[in-house]
Figure 1 (cartoon, rainbow over the protein chains, first blue to last red):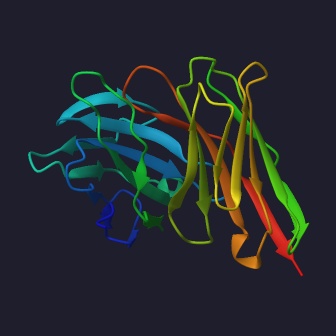
Figure 2 (figure 1 turned 120 degrees about the horizontal axis):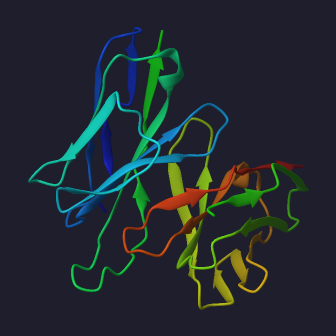
Length: 117
Length: 112
């Protein structure tokens, strides 16, 4: 079965550079979530999109932005990178019932390991 | 408030049962999840339980939910070395968009 695909798997950037992370959800999933997991920490929710609209926002810095496209893939754009942005970035997808907003379980991608030097 | 707590470390002997505990604070949580993360890898959904259930069993995994005490546990029967990983408890808050709040994770070490 198709899973959530994230690219790239690894990314090395220098301070003040920009980075773009991509996420391709499971087919027919309409909701995408971004999480950040620092070294030795639990995943922290950044932002989510449902049907291409931002649905929830967590601890996402103003330097980061994200969007969901018409094909439901999502991109996380990170600017003015800082050393503290080094982390594993997970994307997850789920299917929300449009009428009932039924919660469905999240499926996570393998993550993008971002290292800021 | 939103807070999920777990003990950080558990060591068991191969073949024994492992029990990983989790407490959460939001009584409106609709779903509670257990994820497994191996070193350098992503989050693998192990199992989940609806908040109106007390127990769910899935092969070697048993999830117990005490909603009154807001306590969730994951029991792994016949623990194997391949079960060594970090196990995250997560709650899904009500509101329809399935944002997950994770605990800090319990590192399970299985020794011979």
